Image (cartoon, rainbow, N blue to C red; front, top):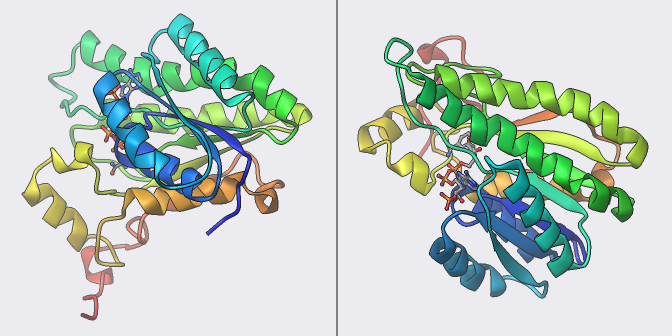
Length: 261
Ligand code: NAP
């Protein structure tokens, strides 16, 4: 699809779901890919799958991105393993459901720690290597939930995904002199292990709200992320790109037409 041969890429949360789709898109495009997450066995399984996709190297790094220290160690390990870094995909995130009325400190702290602090620590740690690259790219995985839409039970999550865009804009300005671009992909409902846990009824309801008639795939998000890493995308920075099958377009349910079989 894209030729990213020789590019060195780190994907946080690359062991599953959207992050795995992003890592796969880069591996297929010829890049060397480091993936990071907490669960060692899921990382090892993912390395096995990614290794078969392209000529680049694939390495795995265990880390909890809620810790600044652990995140900096993980990025240093990935940079050493790949001999540099051209692209950081700050993708790892969690989306626990909790109503506003029931929310306690642990709920809010947990989602802020992974989705906001974890994103910021990963980008901070990658700055020296991305600067040395000369064509550094940061690609955040935000969401339509928060920046564009809302959903009962995800007010804290939506706040973190909107916060990522606030971070993106100032980071894009700070890093522009280093020739590093900072952009975000905003997925709609993407069929991942995490989303499958929401249950069949949720998935069926969501599909009916999507003008293109189906949930997206991790590969759809991987394609957008890989595009943002190409030389052709070098002049795009500080921008959100929505990849949602048109889910955020309809004014009312009647605006979603039946999909032709
Ligand atoms: P997922 O299948 O649950 O995968 C999440 C990934 O993040 C896993 O690799 C997980 O590995 C890692 N992770 C979670 N907490 C971590 C931590 N503290 N430190 C390091 N790694 C951690 O979720 P997903 O659906 O692919 O979501 C990925 C991103 O896309 C998130 O930022 C989410 O907000 C966003 N998103 C998803 C959807 C969707 O429809 N699925 C829609 C919009 C946006 P470990 O658990 O082993 O650490």
